Image (cartoon, rainbow, N blue to C red; front, top):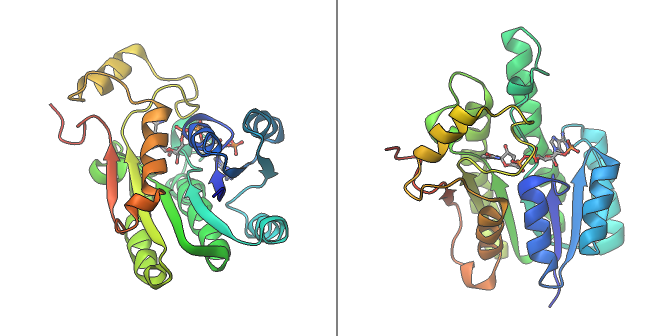
Amino acid sequence: MARTVVVSGGGTGIGRAVARRFAADGDQVVVIGRRAEVLERAAKEIGGTALRADLSEPADVERVRDELAERFGGIDVLVNNAGGNVERHGDGGGDVAARWTGNFRANVLTAVLPTEALRDLLNPSGRVVFLTSIAALRGSGGSSYGPMKAALHPYSGDLAAALGPRGITVNVVAPGFIDDTEFFGGTLEEERRAMLVGQTHTGRAGTPQDVAETVHWLASPGAGHITAQIIQVNGGAERGR
Ligand SMILES: NC(=O)c1ccc[n+]([C@@H]2O[C@H](COP(=O)([O-])OP(=O)(O)OC[C@H]3O[C@@H](n4cnc5c(N)ncnc54)[C@H](OP(=O)(O)O)[C@@H]3O)[C@@H](O)[C@H]2O)c1
């Protein structure tokens, strides 16, 4: 049966691959992000729905909840994928408080606000998946990105306990280096890329499809007894070489 699947940040990169993967099953997929044009393109490709919103803004999230409730009633799968390292892009500004607040908004609020707003709309046997990062496990070179992603780990565990009685599972997918997304904003130097690939046991960069398949599997009926887990998709890079 077709499910209703909500993918934050579904207009680009990993989120777009996730949206495609569910749409290939005939699911009704809603992609959410801030850039209307990007979202419309992604939604058109998969025959889905585009909802423009800044998910770090409570008013936008309330509007999204009302629209989803009106259009679909319930939600089967919520993929909290929106995020990124705003320090690396420099949008966080120069001071420490601004940099940490920037990554808090970009990675914690974008996941927690929609989850809290939509949890009562989740259907029985629903699925919640958070995208964090290898940086949540081993740090991000002094930036606030890894610590902010790590905040989602205990949050998702508590949520799994709260939603378990409704048959809903809650899991985290923590990718390592994934190519072909907007994450690095075109700033990844060849030397650093080679270093990241060199940390894997598989000898290659991850792809958005690698992550999409893992999210799709966690959302499958067969994964119904997997909850409160952190699944790493990094070719073994967390252990290093
Ligand atoms: N690529 C990697 O190596 C890697 C590794 C580990 C983890 N991750 C994580 O994987 C997730 C997907 O990243 P990606 O690599 O696919 O990068 P990406 O292409 O930059 O995707 C991030 C998406 O999130 C959306 N987004 C960001 N802030 C938002 C906000 N406030 N409200 C709504 N949407 C927002 C962006 O759309 P708009 O800009 O239009 O809003 C964009 O579509 C992120 O959480 C990232 O931290 C990536």
